Image 1 (tube, rainbow, N blue to C red):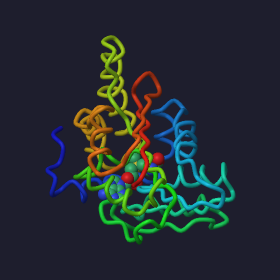
Image 2: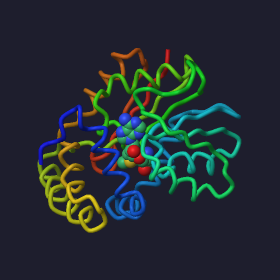
Image 3: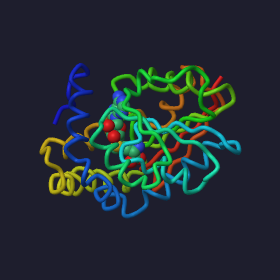
Amino acid sequence: MPLPPPEEKPRYVRDMFAGTARRYDLMNRLMTLGQDQRWRRLVVAACQLPRGGHLLDVATGTGDIALEALRMRPDIHVVGSDFTPEMMRIGQSKDRHQRMPFVEADAMHLPFPDNSFDAACSGFLMRNVTDIAATFAEQRRVVRAGGRVVCLEITRPTTPLWRDLFHLYFFRFVPRVTAFFSSNKTAYDYLPASTLAFPRPPALADIMRSVGLRNIQYRTLMLGTIALHGGEST
Ligand SMILES: C[S@@+](CC[C@H](N)C(=O)[O-])C[C@H]1O[C@@H](n2cnc3c(N)ncnc32)[C@H](O)[C@@H]1O
């Protein structure tokens, strides 16, 4: 399936996540073979928050990174933002003690003042936006100089045999699992298509640099299928 044209992508993405919200967490656990929460803990660690620090989880969805951050670091303050209320409502139901605000917002136009956070992170957001550089630039803007901007995303492995297996997994298995759990029947083609179109880790690092983030570092996880990038705001 071709990806939706840029002008239709935000609505398409929002509808897709609204339709999968109730089954999103279960789908994640199944498709990542239970590894996704471990990656989220690495995201929180990469944010290098100071004691009592403020973290923004952009595209928080059902709040898994944000809530993991609060579990790991009860001393910090976390805000989650996303443009799909249906996803955040699931997150709110998991946040039994209402420890964090969920704010409806587009990742490319964050409703927060400059330098208002010690770190910003996103998990599985960047494939879905129409302008990756503008999205990182917003995170750089709201994070104080020296604070961290961290990104977790799916990426394509480069090792020949593993690359072929990954294609099989992604184009055959993932669409079937997604189709089974999703009420939006086109959602199952979108995930592999958006991953193929997404920049490889060195190119993503260049995009981060281009918006003024510095000291960019990245590593890949899960046999090169997941990339974790971090940079410093200026
Ligand atoms: C794959 S989910 C990831 C949720 C969560 N970060 C996680 O780790 O499970 C992607 C989320 O990004 C949100 N999203 C996509 N594009 C967005 C945008 N431009 N602005 C705000 N949220 C966006 C979707 O609504 C969805 O909740």
